[in-house]
Image (cartoon, rainbow, N blue to C red; front, side, top):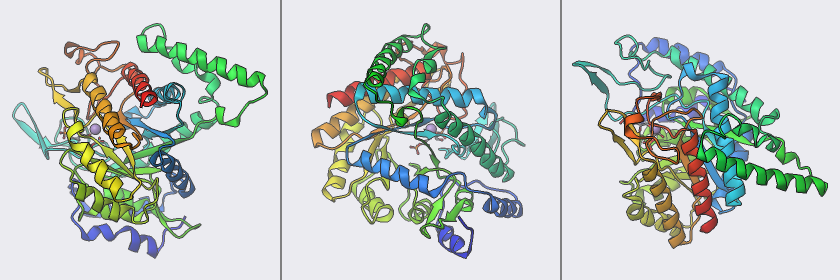
Length: 449
Ligand SMILES: O=C[C@H](O)[C@H](O)COP(=O)(O)O
Ligand SMILES: C=C(OP(=O)(O)O)C(=O)O
Ligand SMILES: [Mn+2]
């Protein structure tokens, strides 16, 4: 990997275009210094890993694998601890085991992790008790605390984002390749959970079946290396383009540009303007790219995005993450899938059942109903079944902690419980039990389709 003139020429063409949702940095000179420093830092991921994920997502696009993408809405610097990271990873590994075993499908595991620090917002300011301040835009930009000082965008935070991502990724790599993710640990991931929750008990029963299957294979003399480690990738929304572009490098093997801040990047619903800077940036890098598609997306938008981001029609390059809302998915998704399929493009279709189903509870908490989340996934499966296309995966906001942010689930959380452990810095996440519930239900849907 090298940083050279080509990096700058190739990586910075977005600067000529309007970029939505960028921080209003008060000190441009300080920003320039930070960018220069970030440009000198080593990559967080290797370009070859991005290529490997592109291949895995190609299998998703062809209907041969299922994508599980999940993690926080907004990671926070003060949550970069072994406990938080392990809990999140454990939850994703458990969901992966459920989907692989009960859904009988290879699962590509991708975290919203190690870089998910920047947030697009619907309003530029927030008012509390008559005081109006700039809105919180993620730990990469400003502080969550409601004070004037905390809410001023500070470019030094971009360096903290890099270091927090590096520390997180380091532990994730250690856990996934160092023995913790070994399938023989399938019970251990559930240990602190089993007695207290219906989904934990259901998981324990499945883990026993996996154990039996492994013992059987072992007795037959089969002990595959694939059981010892897990392939796990990192993804985040490519939002703050100064950061993403400072971490873009020319791959010395191929001469192509890669954004080495994460394996997969996605462009959000609020920044996917066809003539905007984010799509231009994403078009220049070789990472696998996701684009969020909300209910106002037209088939023409989708086809133009394919033209811009996947001109070679390479399965795995482009993932459409649809987030329509439970009440709209059956209406809005069919035409998009139909027209994209008719064009000959082979994108991966993934369902984000979170972002179209947010509402404010009477208590003032931003929340989501588990039943709405489930209903959007059901609608997504129905649409793909009726069109003969592949429901490629789910993209969810979750945490491994027992928070009370979304209502419903087998171990039911009520609106009146929300205040108990409402810890998110932005959107409400499924807790561990709700995440496992969802995995079991999605596995059933996948098997039945
Ligand atoms: O994931 C993020 C949120 O959906 C996005 O930031 C919008 O949230 P807001 O309406 O609270 O700004
Ligand atoms: C902001 C997000 O989603 P969307 O762009 O779909 O609104 C998100 O994924 O946190
Ligand atoms: Mn969110």
